[in-house]
Image (cartoon, rainbow, N blue to C red; front, side, top):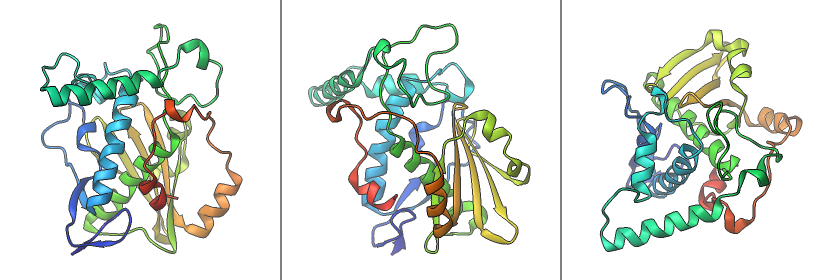
Amino acid sequence: MARCIHCLRFTERPEKDHVFPDSWYPTSTPPTIQRWTAPSSPDCNRTFGQLEHDLLIRLVLSLDTSSDAARGLDERVYRSLGIDVEDSNKDKVIRDQLRAKLRSEFFPPEEVQDLPGKIPGLGPPPGQPPGPSVFIPWAGLSMMAEKIARGCEYRFQNKKRYVEHPYGVLTLSPNADELSNDPMLRFTKLIDFGPGCQVRRGFASEDPAIVRYFITIWGALHFKVLIDFQEYLDDLMKQLPKPGGVLPPINRAMQVPAYLRRYNQ
């Protein structure tokens, strides 16, 4: 019997969930790098696994993979799509369906170039023309950042902490400059998952349970995760502007599982 770090329920069949998704580590990751895991219920582990897979494909197709921080991710995604891979008939059908679903989500650059909500760090490298765009749900990114923060809280110094009432979690998405200029960064400790994921953790001296996480994924995506009193986070959310973006047609967008939404609101 163990408790899931995500839904906080007890489960008789706990599974090991990678704090930073195992498939998201670049091939440049040294073999000595820690790959932390934390207890998860089978339902949470399976549903997060699907979310990680869906996000990986869409993010990597929008990412400059020439850096050490993202090396080899493009080849991994191409294999998952069945590109340059010999498939069995069953695998071929599944991958054909996945490619067709992905193609249906593409929008030509002229349709989205003036829309709000572009994600800092994604897009073509400087000097290259834009290609087709794909919508990426902020809810999915927010859940992944929270998953990393919850997993780190559990594993950091073997605290085995579960973030629960009266505390809650809130994910922000600052740009790289805002993140690097945050005054709290000077008081954080690095949690090193290799070039693909750098996490810094800081806490409030008056209450060590109040924690701030600064997360950088593949050197491109930046998140600030707040662990604080839920009442404070609720008040803060009322003051913050909503993430910019648009709602694409539901049949042309990646869906975030309702199961995860229930436990991450």
